[in-house]
Length: 371
Image (cartoon, rainbow, N blue to C red; front, side, top):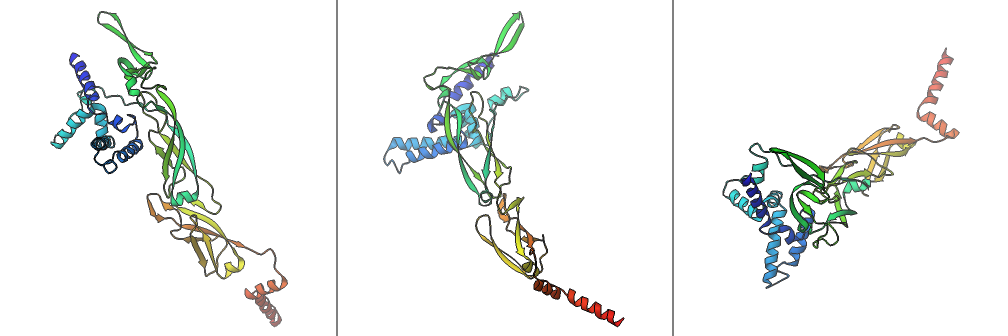
């Protein structure tokens, strides 16, 4: 037991020592990939040697920013750094370069391996589910959507408001131990609003966070509606939900909803539409040009008899495939024949002559005469 305490103390010291890459980039420990990349771009431009010729301090800061981004943008390196600090990360990289793998994580050794219990995964806050309404054109050509999102965020320096307390077992909860007698101990959970997470509590009044541990903030969320994306598709923005002490932020999920189009109806990767033609066009031929979803023109023609409600297929004029935008579905055109409301006497006679009905009547009368 004494060895385990010494080990945990040594691990805690190991994590704290070394460089703080989060502070170098000026981001929270729970910052997502986009926040880390944005901070890196901003600082790398600020301290770039081309903008600061001869400035040794700016050159060193530029190198620190690059090193911090290299670690925090790599999921494996960031995970090791969060657990074991900079020195632990460097040791891991040395072992990996020497062909010895990454070495056993001491946390895994004591809490995962050798029959120990697995570490509990950090809880995640609730997801926020929203609808995003897009046009058929947006789903045909693609679109970048930006929305203003209001959320609760943790103070940038809230880590400075932490104090160790092993009785804390989670946010707002602690474990109380009572000795009932020689060799008998009772452990009970109880509420404690001061507990911020497992093994630590948070100071409610802290100079590092004068506005409080959490504050309301607005952030522009940007995501892409890809060409061919189906209706009902869920676009997930990871870790963009409200931030809670002791928990990972939830995700913001946008559900794609397609607004109706006046001409086209989508069916998978195919598009459907109706086209009206006259009776004469149905009997002889027709040629028409339509405007597609994105504005390009499509010619539809036929040099044969067209039946009412016949479906004409125009290949590769449907929606793009979301996995391969160069591959498109078909355009299915349903023909609606517009019949005239009435015919004149002359038109009726012409129709009868064209389709031979009048001629067959004359032939019938001549046959009667012969009889």
